[in-house]
Length: 187
Image 1 (cartoon, rainbow, N blue to C red):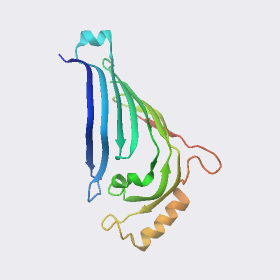
Image 2: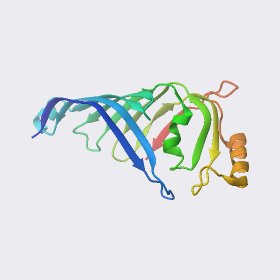
Image 3: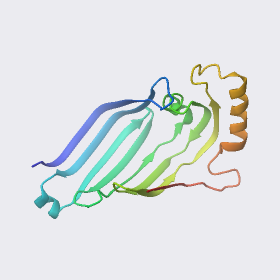
């Protein structure tokens, strides 16, 4: 049996290469200066009957720049492995996401600023639902040639202009004050 009252993780780095299906080079997902505390870590059914919640609180520097805070709760005895998580991401320049996006979705962020974002999700082994509050301004993107990212060519340059004019929402909330919430509903 495992029974740990508190587990501490401090001063670690998670640098995870992510290779897209059509990708050539790995994208980089980075969490730095990770600090986590997990409470009630056990697989003892008698202890789980007394307290069925495993709680994890954590902070890290997302992409090495912006503070990400998260709070997780796992129901250890739920038949569908129910858990919840919520948190915040402090403001950061959108271009900090380029090491992740350029090689994963072949887009380069040219400009933009993410304001303080937040999320609250409920999930289990089959489905998830919740909301993401993601305010930002001045978002501009550039489509990339996956074989030569620094030379997009005329077609991708024209495509970038069209994407920025017709598809990308430059600001959230919009210039009319309408806020678009991110709805999570996967099942």
